[in-house]
Image (cartoon, rainbow, N blue to C red; front, top):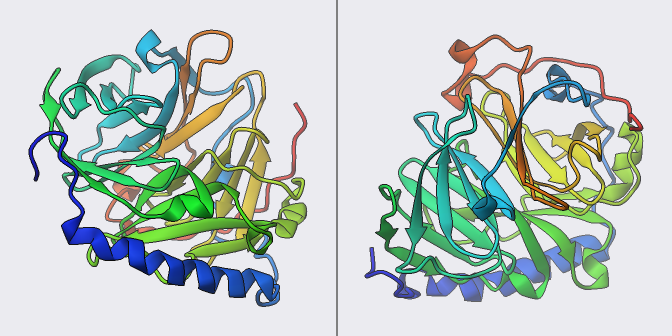
Length: 327
C-alpha cells in the first residue's frame, strides 16, 4: 500500500488501455441491436418477492448530519455494516440492528474529496468508486484513523456515469452500474461493467447489457437510471436500485430481468444505496432530500443465517414476478 494520499498507477496502467476495446465491443453490440432478447424467466430464481417493501414495513433510522448525502452501503465478510457519504471519503460502521454509528475513519489524510457513488468490500479490501468509474482501494481503519489508499484510474467516465458498486464473490470481481450512458450506441440498455480483482482489468464486454424494453414485462416504464447495485448473498442474483424511478429490479446471473417493484416515493425519496445483512435483511439508504438521511431495513421470509454464505451453497427459489404497485 502506498503512503497516504499517493496515487498509484503502475500496477493498473493497462486498465486505461483496455477500456477503449471494451467501449468498441459495447458499441458493436448495441449499435447492431444486440442478440434477440431472451424470453423472460418470470420470477424463476427471484428472491425479491421475499421482502415486504410496502410503506408500513421495515425499520427506519435517521442518519447523522455528516451522512446526509449517504451514497453507498456494504457488508463486511464478518457481517458488519458500512456506509459512506458522497463528497468526502469517510467510512462509517453502523450497528446493523440499531443503525447506531459505531465508528468512522477517513481515507487519506483529510478524507479525499470526490464524487463517490458506491462502496464494496471484498475480504479485507475496501473499494470506493467515483462517478467516472475510478476506484479507490484501502483497508479498514480504526476509530478516527486516516488510512492509506491506492487510486485505480479506469477511463470509464467517457461513456458511463457510474453510480453503484458491488462485490461479486462468485467471479471475484467488482460490478459497476451506469446511471447514464453517452452516445447513441449506449442508449436503451442497462449497462453493468465488471472489474476483475485477480487480473486488475475490466472484462472486454459489459457483464450485462439488458434491453430496457424488457422492463415492460415486469410492469415498469422503459427507463432506468440506477443509483445502486448489490449481489444477493444466497441466490447470487443482481439487485439494481434506481432513485429517480423509485424502482428496484432483480436480474438473473445471465442478465435476464426476474422481478421488479416500485418503492414508496414518500418512504424512499432518494434511495442511493443498498446491501444485504448477515440475516439476509435488505438495507436501503436514502439521501436527505428535505431533512435527515435515513436507513431502512426490510427483513426476509427466507430462513435465517444458516442459508447465508458461502454464496455457492445458495439455492434458487421459483417465485411469481412482482406486479408494479403505485404508491
